[in-house]
Image 1 (cartoon, each protein chain N blue to C red):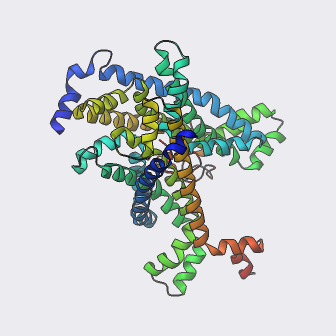
Image 2: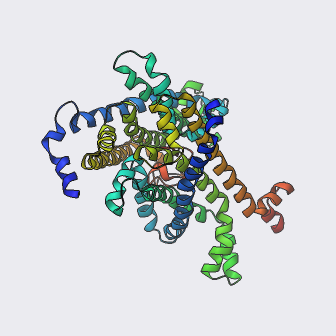
Image 3: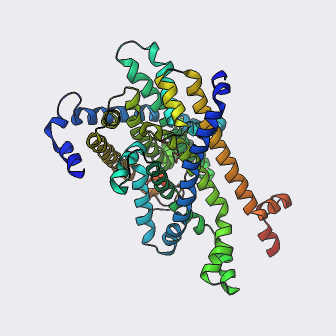
Length: 224
Length: 251
């Protein structure tokens, strides 16, 4: 506790860097996973290929990916870009399947109704299918966010600055307070990501709250 | 640079001796298999028990929440506080193995529980109505039906352990991580990258072996194309990417 009080400004700076290294890949990875997941949904043969490929990418241990990326990207080993790219790869790997399954969970009747109303594919995707997929997408994003926050801390082993530095430094110099602060800061950051995504999900799906308030699904009530 | 990495990988001097690739690879596989086996011994019975009784679900929730703990932090905390209490050369090994075990149990536990939870209650009732004892219901009905999710939990745990064992080299564990950690410390990039390639290859091979085991161990009635799937959806890919509860976020 005293360690944190003496170094809180340093912790905040590191937390900010950590947040960027976790959030930027989350956003970019999500944007990349959307079309890939859509393609996996659209073409039957694409699903096993994309899901297997992303599974293989996720299998590569983080430290190995961090040190191998400079070879592929031509970056220096200390470049934070390696971490951003690695985290983006993990995010895409986790989310491709989520996006495909989330789009698959949109009820066929709703899709058909949109077609009957004259919605063409792009508009149908943006205004009908994507909003209805939000709850499943948010669940996937929450898993990816917590995963990212944890993996980013490993980057301190290759000298990229973030909260993981408190862990390595606390261990190397046997400063227990610093190590504990690092662990707690990572947990708090993961919790912040989780709460933010949950809140975002609620904001984007106002109909869920209406359904809960009425104690029954709106769609069924309207049909009766 | 590629040639220098290749040269390191194929040099016989990199392979032999107590700190050669051969020995390090053996250590890495040994640690991973022992830890995951221990996680199965703890996690599967516990998951079956919680799923069977429907009591103690908080333990599942706690295990899931615990995954937000950064693996690096857990490893360092155990090495710093548990290590000094253990005599001799085990001081470096035991804390790491405990950390790996703590990381391996949640996916196995959550997978087993989810597998039992997803079983159609009618199946369990039928087993009971036929006069099966509770233990027999667990052994002959619940465990086989839960098998697909138990095994995806084991696969997640294995991925997690292989990845974290690499990092554990930093606190003195052997294994392939030595090449990465020592290579980074001494600025020997060919060795670092060579080690990374070996670790990645090992992870892929182990995952492929487990995927095969998953195929062989899942009862015929539950396999793809069999009757209605109890586990959610297809198992074409890696469980780590699935939306199933066994997914292991932190590596």
